[in-house]
Amino acid sequence: MDTWEPDPRRAMPIQALLAWCRSTCGNNLDGITISGGEPFDQPGPLRALLQAFHAWRRQSGLDFDLLCYSGYPMKTLQQKHKPLLALLDAVIPEPYANGLPLGKRWRGSSNQSLVPLTELGLTRYAPFVDDLAENQGKHMQVAVENGRIWMIGIPERGDMAQVEALCLERGLTLDQVSWRR
Image 1: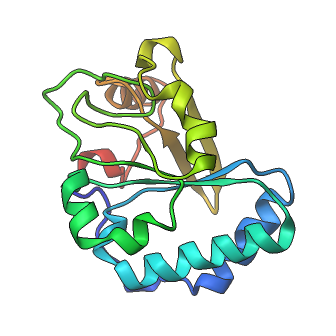
Image 2: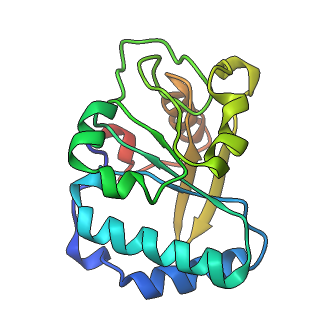
Image 3: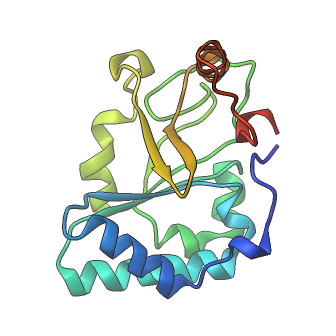
């Protein structure tokens, strides 16, 4: 199940997204992560986005990597999206399975793997391929933008319900949360 309903009003031209990334990160960038919904369900726009990131990387001389999450099995990605995989440094494939344990670093369930695809991907991600989730501790980013709170990361099961309960205890009701969709 996707957590975000497609909304054409939120569409953004790739050049505008790239400009936002540049203004937000400047030259302090070591990686870009693409997640979903399902990025591979939009192969044309995903290709254009990845090509724009490659151009930025070449022009700027920055050494950032490109990591993408997908709910598709690796075999499906290799069969249907090989040209897109060639534009990524690493991929985390397989659907999130709520009934499986957390597993390894940066993966929501133990069926998911971390697959380096390039030399840069190997350099950045090889040390973490088998690294257990509990070795990293919990890491969530929180940002406030235009009256909205954004939480980014992979919470443990029950964490978001706990956040919601603690907010409610303090008089803050969370509406339109993606984890309840």
